[in-house]
Image 1 (cartoon, one colour):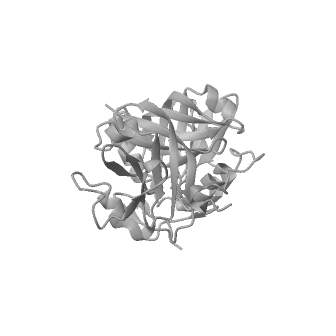
Image 2 (image 1 turned 90 degrees about the vertical axis):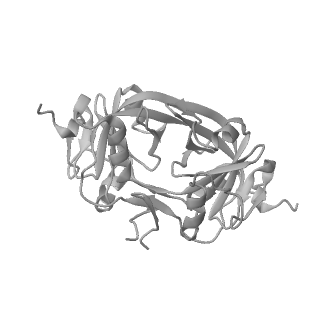
Image 3 (image 1 turned 90 degrees about the horizontal axis):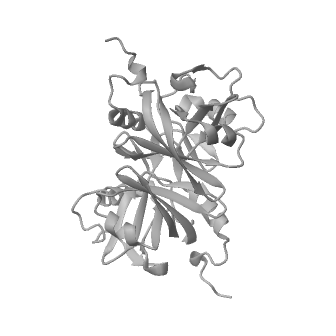
Length: 167
Length: 167
């Protein structure tokens, strides 16, 4: 067969998506929530959605270890990581790790949300929707408190590794 | 009053959101669609949402010039811009510009979707949901075709300007 590769005919779509997003770069965030235990995970899907009301979104897999806590949480913590925090990002992406054990530094913030120390910026957001999207949920949440004044420049993720801005 | 600034008590929430996302960095995409005219806009909200089915999401303001076309589109074009394409990103963010006039290079792709030339990667995606989120919509779309093999490294947006990866 002579189907054009550009039409994706010879490339299963999940593989196409993965290949395309390997070309994309993203800022790195950690999402936390308080349940029977503190939970949290590294996310490269955080975006600002609307200014009025002030909404963010992020994705979470329904098979992830954090999902049971995120599924029930009224509030979540949203943290923008700095380029000095690639170890923290790796910890919150690692299966089986106790992500809140030392050297992770955190405290309990507004509404009991676990807040990570040393980040560029954090918000506590009230969850307003969990939109089904295949094996994931897109969580929409409204900013209710926060601090954008941490030190440093943003951590980035590209082609399977952490990086920083050029200048 | 002595409210803690970290609780956001002295900072209106839309302003907090803006301040926090100034600390965030994002990859740059252009979303296109075909309607009575070709339409498109620069987005820093593109993310991969799920692998099965292969879903992406992006945000669009209902007051934006592209919204009437995006609102009716069955398919959209999703383009990952390279660091050599900051001019293209600026064009697709500029009010009143004819974004598809030269020097913009484009062609009509699968399902009539306008495809920009010279990008790192593109996909044609079928719109599956437009989720209301304040004055914006979160569009969920499933990848149906694409090419991830363009040359270059990703364009980034941070603190109001375009940038690249460090190395």
